[in-house]
Image (tube, rainbow, N blue to C red; front, top):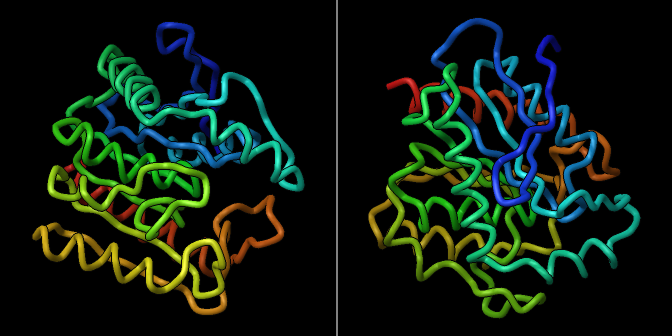
Length: 239
């Protein structure tokens, strides 16, 4: 890994972690949405990894500096519950404006990427800010299409019609937080709205399979989804 990330100010007290490829650009961009555990070392490395793959990448610190161990689910969920969708979308706009102000970025070519809690926000961003994203990839985003969300969040299937960017969705068959019937509801909503998407479900894989620091990490699923996601972003951001 060659890219070196740095903490940056995104405006109105919001910080983010930013990394860019070597060279003058302009580079396509990625906005990463964190899991419920905060902007930890995994997300710093992931930001730098996307920079190495050719993307100017920023990860907004939606938790304001708070980080929770992966064993501390109760406090992580308590923090998740304090987030507000409108506030997070306003913070997303600050991250996008930050990218637009950089000389090395192609701010017209941005992808949204999120994991777990952040997967839901990447899904929402594609609907709430449709003119600002050209692709989106959602990894096991909880709260997108349940009949009733366990944490009291609004489900998002009524927002699908607002989306413009093509989307990938990634799940595991053993994810007890997001069951097959929810996959079906999401796919039906996307298809009925005439949206471009792919939905991949890895066999024998559970929630959090992409994160190398979690017990649920699955090397093969992480490798395959990484390759597909970076190829997808290059295709749609560089068209």
